[in-house]
Image 1 (cartoon, helix red, strand yellow):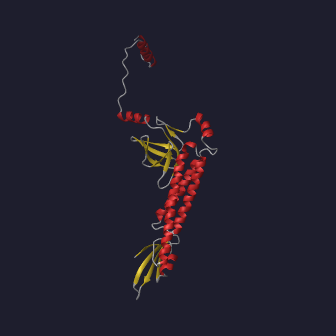
Image 2 (cartoon, helix red, strand yellow):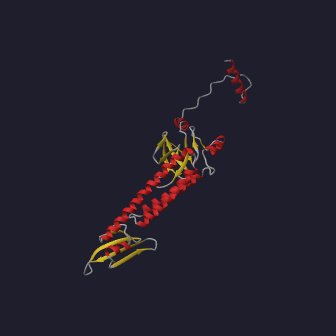
Image 3 (cartoon, one colour):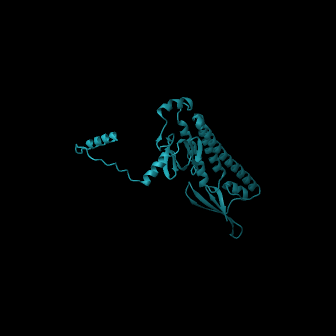
Length: 282
């Protein structure tokens, strides 16, 4: 009790009050603030998350705590909301926060890179001399895959040349992913292998689709029939030259309507081409 009175007197003196001993009252407690308290509780309970790599494509993915995650997936209660070339945005119980590439969000909500006392051991034990260059290769791999997916999106009907372009981009993506695997720290190589396997599987799908189209085109030509994805040359081989061609568009994107007459000027069929590829008919 005596110690409490002495502390109170000292506080009054510092505040510039009268020199005499004055009666002190207990300090008022801060008013409750549910929103502030909720924010404090949320920030203090955020899971520790580290983003080691990202690959941007139609379906972007990120390596978080050694796991491959896509948008909408969850890890330790945090849901991935967005993946960009800079990092990953998470939603943890309504608390939105972003973890930058190669940074860590700790349980207090702070974001930081590797601690200075860890950098030396990480470099010597798990990283190649290129440091974090593997992340650049992952980004390049994602760009190649995104380019391939853009070709598919732009072409409602795929032709052999389109499949060739897609396969070439997937080959570049695989090469970049393999280089990233060689340079990556040991703890993320398993995730990169999964990304590489995913790229390889997608490439196999397009390769099979190209083979199937090649077969259908050969069969159609042999039977004097048509199949979507034929080139203008294929169509001429199969059913001959049209009686009339109408063209519109420009040098980069153009449409053609081929009209075949049966007799007495009656049109028996119309074929539609986009950049020399047969895409529709009536």
